[in-house]
Amino acid sequence: MKPVGFLFFVLVSITSCLAQAKLYTASFVGTMGPDTVFVETYTVINNHLYGKVLFRMFENHIGVFHVHFYPNGTIREFNMMAMDPANSSLPYTSKTAWRFPFNRTMVCANDTCTVFVSRRDLPQEAIVKQAASSMDFYGGTNPLFSLIEWNCVRLAKSGKRALGPLTMTNTSVVSKISVRYTGQDSILFGGPFIEYTKIKVDAECRIISTDGTGTAYNFLVTKQAPIDIDQLAKRMTKAVSIGDPSPRDTVTANIQQSNLSVDYSRPYKRGRKIFGAVVPYDSVWRTGANGATVLTLQHPIQIGKTIIPAGKYSLYTIPGPQSWRLIFNKNVIWWPTDPDRGSDFAEVPLQVKPLAVSKDPFTIEIQETKMGGTLKFQWDTVEAYTDFKVLNK
Image 1 (cartoon, helix red, strand yellow):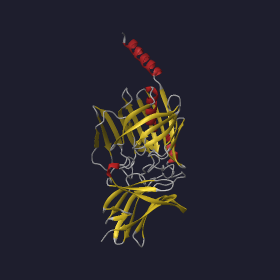
Image 2 (cartoon, one colour):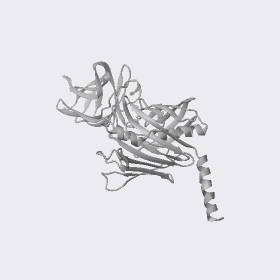
Image 3 (tube, helix red, strand yellow):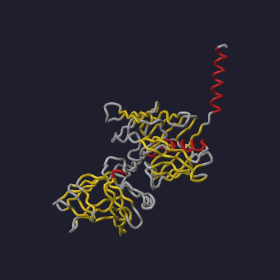
């Protein structure tokens, strides 16, 4: 074949393949109360997912991502780069480098998923290996909703009512999730690690909207026509970022010559209904946000007939409309959305009463009394509390 004829043949073949490839582009807008927390624009073509997302929590920055999948729909390679919101061709220089790695890459092959992380505060690339035969989802504080949608579409193509267990990671933790129909246009996505996001889908199982109320992904998300992330970032980042929606704090007290402290994160209401919604009733709540809420005792304390020895405990609660339960857990490093219930040490009741003045953000107080002290958990118009004695003699 002559060179010109061969070139014409190749061009025709490429054009024909592109004409047959199904290309889908759209955007997601995520809100938390009155605040827009992210805007994600993405494209799916064959086994590739790529795009940009403007994140506004913590610090304004752009995430540039691409995901390549194996033919069975599991992740072959995941990559996310943190870029400057004023110019997405430049890396984002974060004030808190641990939250914003320059680059995260995950490669899954030979029953191992390896995550490579480059950060400003690390002299060399961090490498984390996960023993997993496949990986279906990569997500942390700011997940890609296009990747959630990818798994919804996988479900539709399978012809099944549910897919799972699926495997997810946030670099450090591996957990099991599922995606399943609960109605003709309704899906639940998630698992113990992130709870279950409620999703409305169209006939192709593409996301119309999601409701993550009461989950780790506590956003309301809607599908939109494609949005220019670069132009949007230049406008929106002129305003102050949302910052940390649940800043870390420590409360300390000296009760009867004994030191007690609680280190915890303090989420805000942001116009949302809290108990029975953001914090579901009759479910284990991390009692704060982000990492574990940790109580440190210099001496043992007694609540009712239960004695809690000196040391450190992660605190969990089970809120209810009329009463709560307080759990003391010996594992203080476990990520608290999937509690290590095998390390529970004790569980005690909490009394509940309404607050005359709404409390925001979530607040933990330790107050001294004539008999010892009172531990209080306050948010919105609810206070749960218990009295305790210090056993330091």
